[in-house]
Length: 199
Length: 258
Image (cartoon, rainbow over all chains, first blue to last red; front, side):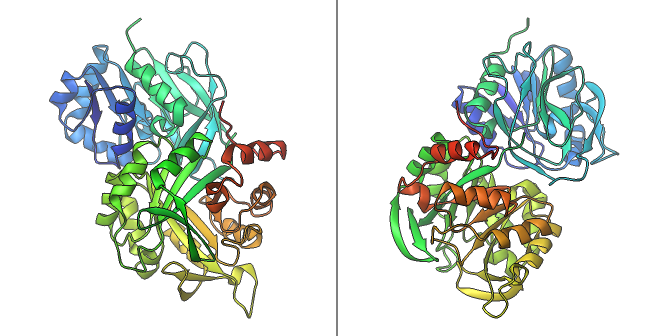
């Protein structure tokens, strides 16, 4: 079972629909016990980074941290990717999971913000998230803050500046775009997560 | 590179897709779920579903039709028409919409923009603006906003209302030129450029699409981030795939399916 963590930030209908379309047994939950009993964890999320405070208040952050340390696969989507970093200038007082030490920041001015629409991925060939997905494929984004390009970056997208469209480190995965809204490419990413096994 | 979006719009009346000329003379164009799936398969970047008679007849959005259309869609799906409260928006999101579009209700009570945005995120709130050039002063900055499906003039200027909508937390503007709508003679590029230049958020141009050249114009001259068409696609005059191939030849960045 995949635990889809509900932290009261936006709408989970599309994520659930897409996970079920690729054959996942997925369940929306805000209960740390359900997170602990799941095979995989998905943290979706649109909206403000500050919403992730709920995870700490509910004991979900501790549960996710322990399960990740124990090797359970984790996928963060959108704000869920940003939460994998130390934090975001969108909510300076609000700590992320700090699986990656960098900080997320707002796009530099000089272009339309938010970054909305279909943009292309420059994919690192070793990525497991993008197995079977051609370099240059398009996915759907909608966000104003972005994670920097780091050692964990497996897909880079350009919007005035390069940023992390996806990160991957062992069992920890994150995508800035919305796989549930990215057509066949997005469904393939979800299927890759569903089929993820330890190396 | 961020591509320009091509959005297929389903104007829905009583559970059927219809197409009108300048907001009247409705013609049946098919089943919403079937058309949504067909457009997505041919490369539409998003689907918009507008319950065009909802406000006029004070009828709620047809949630069941939304649910049926959403089931087959894995591209962004926007629903508008008759959404008056954050609770009504919540029901539409629950039925499978990713974004809602509000028009008359936002003009009547602009706080609604922030109320929905704070709960579902700004990216989920599109403010739709139906505008017409004023007869006395046809300058694009002077175009006037209409409500209730183009029936009631508000006296507000489109450019100013777009700015206020952005300040109140709208994620995108859907700008329909009522002068161009249904004519298939081209978008109102001047009006689109005026609104696009006035806000930071993306602007979707609507009204007047007939041929690929119109899209080239509205992206280049109109500074539109996305362009929407309805009847042009429904009757097979141009499908999204053919349109995008032509746009790519013209040097407009678009997402092409493999």
